[in-house]
Length: 201
Length: 201
DNA sequence: AGACTAAGATACGGGGCCGTATCTAACAAG
DNA sequence: CTTGTTAGATACGGCCCCGTATCTTAGTCT
Image (cartoon, rainbow over the protein chains, first blue to last red):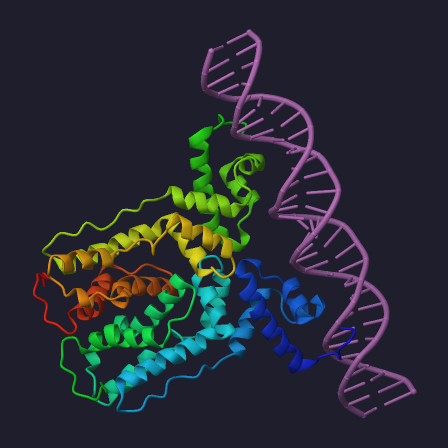
């Protein structure tokens, strides 16, 4: 730190939060180290150890500091459009380093049970819901049959986006998001009953 | 190895394949080491280095040695049942250490591009397909509209099973598999057209 | 200015792993 | 039995990281 003034307090902590998320992205959970984070943040290990005993503790705090997440704000007259926008919001979120961190922990949960337990405390529930928020909103307005909103149906959009990412290593484009809505979500919520509300087709 | 005769040739290689898959399961990609594999296999590092330069090379060979995978054998008169059985087969496969290894590599693909490239060579295509095999079979028999078999629809079952596993850390039970078929896959393949074939409901 | 606090720098012994080198010994084949 | 091959054991220097200890110094407050 020969050429830069010293950061203190909240500014320093924010820099450390950013550094641990970036280091995780590059190294993964298995190679996340205090030395790596310190190097990336341009700070001394002692500074980290004064606050956190492990890189995991720092990581969990960094994840918690990134919340709350923006949630969908559905209208009332465009189910299809709102679902597509919810998936776009999901993509925005998934680009954030803290979302990547959550995903990393969940994926390797059995290897890091303490991290997983710590994450459950940051999120008391199932976490963010994108298409589910939209679907529940339209059901409350009477445009959808609430009986059609099962956990499977609520999971559909996010599951398909997640798998697309894992299979291809890239994000689904706008066409794919529309296909997910048209070919999977809408047929599922329509199943068993003719819809009575607006769908904007 | 004081108390056991020495393994040689194919028997030894098979043991090393099993060891690297087990070590990966416990340690993850980031902490996969030659020493760990050798220790788990009860063998010397030199034995590993005589064959492979890196743990990754050993891992890819172990994955390749576990193929081909059993595929669905659908009948012709029970779409629902065949889809459920396909998902059960998917679960069986996903329990195998080599499937776990494939998943680990795909999930961390951007951290290990060489491993990912190596994996693409073991699989020239998208890899195993479970519900897609069943759906295509029924479409060939004329029981389903081939136009309904889009990549999104073919991905549905596997996506939902995958996400369930990541969210909960456990496998979906039989009820959940049936729900996935009834609430997501069947509505999707039915969408737009009334089915003409057997569905066994 | 002085006192205090906390950030930053560095050293250190120890553990783990790497990749190589060297050697012993088990096993198969003739 | 001998010969050849390969499995297994171990040593080694070097690198990385850990967690702790110690010290210096930048920055804030009075």
